[in-house]
Length: 109
Image 1 (tube, rainbow, N blue to C red):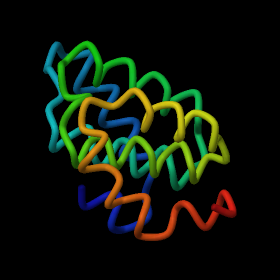
Image 2 (spheres, rainbow, N blue to C red):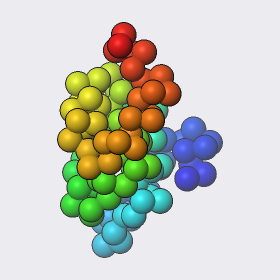
Image 3 (tube, helix red, strand yellow):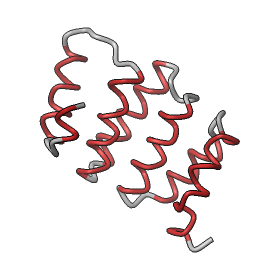
Image 4 (cartoon, one colour):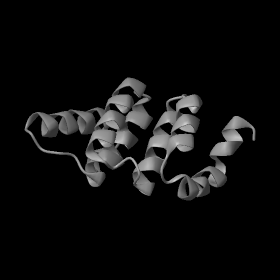
C-alpha cells in the first residue's frame, strides 16, 4: 500500500505479481492497492487480470472491492465496463452510493 501512496504504481504491480508467483493468495487488502495502481497507470489489461483474480478469490461481492473495480474501469476510460460491473454486482444497492458520489456525472446522467 505504501507504494501506491508514494505514487510507485509499477513497483506495486511488480510486488503483486511476485506475491502471486510465490504462491501467496491475494486478499481484499492486496487487491485494493493493485486496483488503485492499475487505475493510476490506466493499465486496463492488468486491471482486467486483477478483476479475474478477484472473481476467482470470491471478493467480487465485497462492497469496497466492487467500488474499487468500478473506479479502476472508469479511470481507465472504460465506462462501459464500469457500468456493466455495477449492473452485475451482487452489491448493487451499496454501490449505488458510489455512483451518487459523482461517477454518474461522467456519463452525463
